Image (tube, rainbow, N blue to C red; front, top):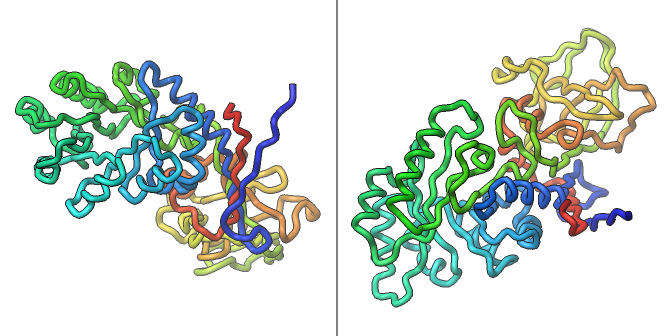
Amino acid sequence: MTTRKPNVTTTGADPRLAGGRLTIDLDALTANWLFLADKSKPAQTGAVVKADAYGLGIVHVVPVLWQAGCRTFFVALAEEGLRVKAVAPDARVFVLNGFFADAFPVYEQSDLIPVLGSLQELSLWKHLNAGRQDKLPYALNVDTGMNRLGLNVSEAIAFAAKGMDEMPVLLITHLATADDPSHALSQKQFESFQKLRAAFKGVESSIANSPGVFHTLHSGFDLSRPGVAMYGGEPVSNVANPMRPVVTLEARIVQIRTGLKGETVGYGATATLERDTRIAICSVGYADGYLRSFSGSGVPLRNAVVKGGAGFLAGRKVPVIGRVTMDLTSFDITDLAEDAVKPGDFIELFGPNIALDDAARAAGTIGYELLTSLGNRFHRRYLHSGKGD
């Protein structure tokens, strides 16, 4: 049996000039979506591609998901929805972040579907649709415990009883704690949403985000809408991650130098060398989305994880030393053989050897933030064989 070699599409900075590179495995992303779709059955499965597909690029992500069978996409902004439509014209696209009157012509022309989340938005939508023979579709967001966007449950049930010229094409709510299976709020949210489904009988419903797909109560709904799990992130806390890694971030080594015992490294002199230390200075920093909180000292957030971040180089992990700066980060490579690395080599910051969420924890954050913070100075390589498994 032969293995199909993936095609490579490159974008971003010239690889000869870039300080780092991103490798995005679209086959792994497709496989993750198919896995989530299987777990979601008998519900259909959409995909959340807001924030430019979690930083990976709508123009690259949406076509492979469409090819895999995804027909429904969720974005935060109408502008993002237009970009989805540009590469998947027949896709059903829901816009999550509210509705404003000046955007109505865009919805008329684009076939995007707003997710309405207040009585005011519903009233405005009804007013703007007045006189139209073909009322434009909309979705309804109901808050069941997040206290973010959405009608409250009593408002939604009263609205359903009163009715409207056109009912929503989709009823959604958002789970606040599904990544923690033991949290009682999820049970309450599922119970509230079941009451809503009864009030909006016959309307398609969606409750399961990435962790929701794995929740024991997720079955019985019509559409799941995974996000971070597709991109390789952990869907459930404190459980082995079943998703394949999608993104590998690497930085180029600019210089290797030796600091002497007792000397300090970087801004603020926050790291004092306890031995003669070989240091790899790498071309990545917080301007690229490699967060300052990866610093091993000198940042209050680091009190929880004193050692901070690490890279993977020549077969082993090497720690960040000193402060992450705008364009450069230092790593302690003393324990590597002297001939193991040289300037121009690449160090992995997260990927197959350092899990995305492990890296995020070292920076006191979550994988979502790392992905969506990735800067535009990287050379990007997209791998895609078309197999997706």
